[in-house]
Image (tube, rainbow, N blue to C red; front, top):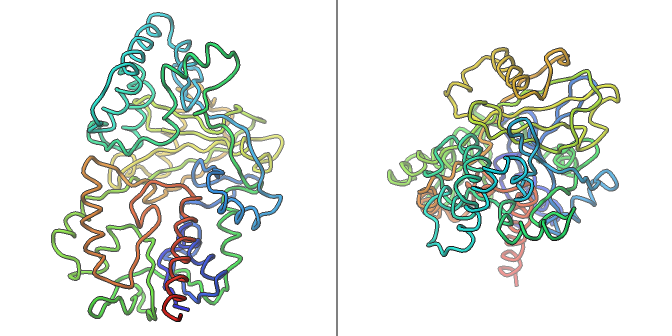
Length: 447
């Protein structure tokens, strides 16, 4: 069996390690921080537990779901909790149901929304050039601007006419004139694109990566190992040099889940200038989190609350106890507010205290949290949370990956490594498929 050197201990790296160990393939995993899990961790504050993001485990890959369920047993439970948009002091379903949105905005604007929606549904359109094209053609400009374009500009940090149509996700596919009639004709029923059911571990989302890590041999995992350079001979990576001088000798295969631009930089002059320039254009969006402990039993029944209003830096809010009652004590609740940012921008430069005060002011202005309810707060930053899909991102990714393809024993995967927006089940699928391919290749060579 080949030996794998894995770079990065987030979900994708842990997935490679887990499936490699299960297949009997030796490996070593290097992670820069002292904690595994990347952006899929669960933190604690007193009796409260909260995730580093509004995470949900989607039951969309039966093989991966079975593997996770086998790790967690009855700790993995199904949760039925819808998400919502907070607009003008009221909740609108998210993903948005047409009927709900129509009633939320009043008769005059509802007329414009319906007319836009009918025109966009009945008209033939050429392929969308940007995310704004896609959203306006599918939902009409009035509704698209209110609940999609404003939120997307906050999340990705760019005008929506500069974003790729790939920004759209499967959650937005069902809002059409047909789904409006479905809701009108079948009272109390939602169009099938509404996704309010998901799987979640009772002890928090981080329990998934904790269970993956616990299944690995300790001697094969090295935390506190920050990669400084990849040394190569010809078309093979032969050594991984750490920032403190420690090295990992590469025996066979290197699988990197590091951000794609970082991987290109670590290879130095081995990557052509054009590919380095392409890598420099690939950007990630960080997310600042504020955990807020509250002296109230519960605020809402929503899994996540989206805030599209551009006047607020907060983009999404979630209440951990709405995912699992075990995430907090009976007499209190908590919420976590997210604010996307680029490194060095106004939100990123705020001190933790100033960031907390800004978010708390916004929560009060949104009429979601009264200041007297706040007991304490904690601030965190999640780096490289979202790859930014500009209109030209696919060309830049292709240029970098082509340059990396010269190394026969190097593979890049994961959300950051492949520069692809994906979920935890996707990360584990990447790892499972990568290990399967190595196993099949090894068997073919020995046959």
